[in-house]
Length: 435
Ligand code: PLP
Image (spheres, protein in one colour):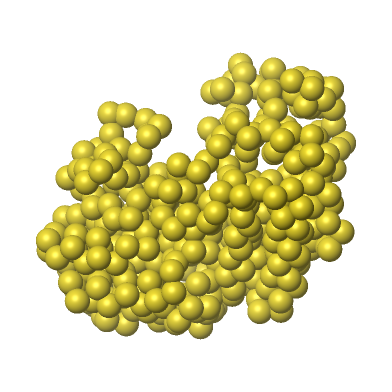
């Protein structure tokens, strides 16, 4: 209650806006996730620059959320802003490609090792398109996903395991699509379960993150991803790697960092420096089977693409982002900051003798209130929303923003060692005060 009161005292202007917003906006926010922040009402932000965010009450924060990876590069980047402004003045949406499309395709091909690319408006969009292509290519109806995965608001992916049964994800709005008929769900890090399920012969593709990142960070066991590739190939199932969040592993995501060989890769929000966009790449074998028929209009591509897809603004933003940020040299700055974070948090955990753990993937890190889980169900069981909410509010009241779901922190080259240490200090104070 004290922290809630402190939050309310610190943010009179946000409180006023939140009050007004309840009229014109459903639940007072433009997007439902914005209700998930700690505090009685959402903060309204005024501006964000680099690794800093300032709210409408003039308070400044070290931003460790970075738009849940949508601003993985940091905020308000001049190169991206200039490219966006220039493109806005010279035309955005024409249904024709701009020259930047060629640069973007070549750069993504170089980074991810897949030769052929398409654009989408969001990672949700890209995943939906890839699933359609996978069904078209295999003639099989079902998709497979990992238990407790998240791939955006794609209906068929909002499924979890209940024993052996595939059921709608808890909390999904209903009535849901009949996921037991559309989706196979397997536990992460369990090759035998994957092999058994794919042997049934009805699965078009396996859509997965190379490490789970949406139920906290759950890393693959050594050899697991090689096993996934072997099993999917043996059952003629296309492998789709969703790198939306795991781009934090490096410039070519986990695909390049770990030498994966997917049939499709989905790259999402970070690549446009905050502009809505995504892309998906495919292997030469897949592209050969799609490209000719598409150009000859033999495939009806209804259900793939959209009027604004591949617009010139998104392409200009991606080009500016990938040529100025998210490069090897940027990760070389951001990853050591994430390491400093894990060292600091691990030190506090050890000092207090807690059974907690801190996990890292590239420039993103996460702390768990338990030893690191190996699959999504164990990760979901480990979530303590009350403790999480208390910690986040404590940090927010002291100028540190964590991702509102789970205990995630993301580092850009704009963060400093002092930013990391500020979090460690605040985290240590929280443990002493709250436990
Ligand atoms: N795929 C993964 C792995 C994600 O984490 C997310 C969002 O967090 C998405 C897809 C969906 O991205 P968007 O909300 O931009 O459509």
